[in-house]
Length: 72
Image (tube, rainbow, N blue to C red; front, top):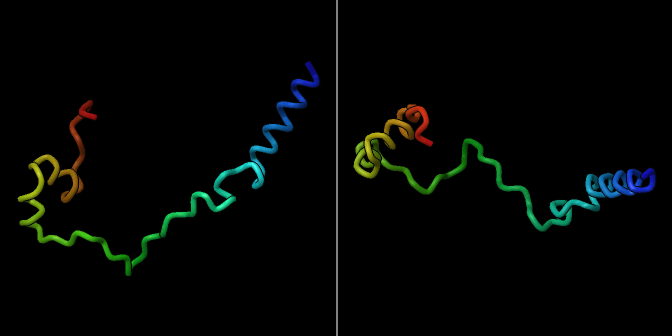
């Protein structure tokens, strides 16, 4: 039993180190960070957003509204 606990602890410790993480090997680089100069692909006027979105979507996405309770 003690050997199992020790072995589990060693595996857990290896998993937490940089050697055990997939991200440390460069497989998944950090995403870019947005700043004040970040360009977003869609810059539409308010009337264009209103034409593309449903009234509920427009309220939630453009007017910082909230969804109805239990809708998600």
